[in-house]
Every structure is written in structure tokens, then in C-alpha cells.
Length: 65
View 1 (cartoon, rainbow, N blue to C red):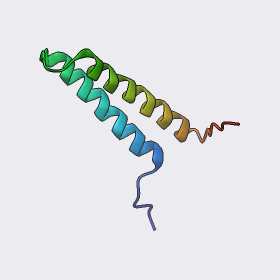
View 2 (cartoon, helix red, strand yellow):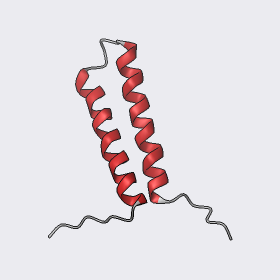
View 3 (cartoon, rainbow, N blue to C red):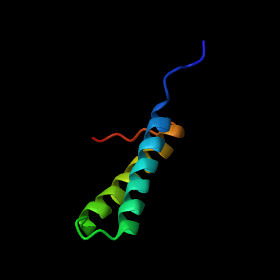
């Protein structure tokens, strides 16, 4: 039976790409109601999710002590 649920890295990749798209869209819109902090937040979220996707894809688990 094929795995019908997406893997963790697939979900993180999809969500990271969505955050990146939102950030670029907001940046290109030039809307004064969207402050730079909000745009930067979405860029930061994209980077975090894409890095986590890469780690998950490579089966790298980081632990804290």
C-alpha cells in the first residue's frame, strides 16, 4: 500500500515555499499597510521551515541537552 500521508519534509517544504511566496508578494505589493517586520517575519519563517525540511529529508535529528 502506498503511503498516502505526506512525509514531514514534504509538509515543511510546502509550508516554507508558501511563506516565501507571501513574503515576496507582500514586498512587491509596496502596500504601506504591510510593515517590513511582517515581511521579514515571513522570510524568517520560510528559512526556518526550509532548513527543517532539509534536515528531515536527510534524517538529521538535533537534540538539546
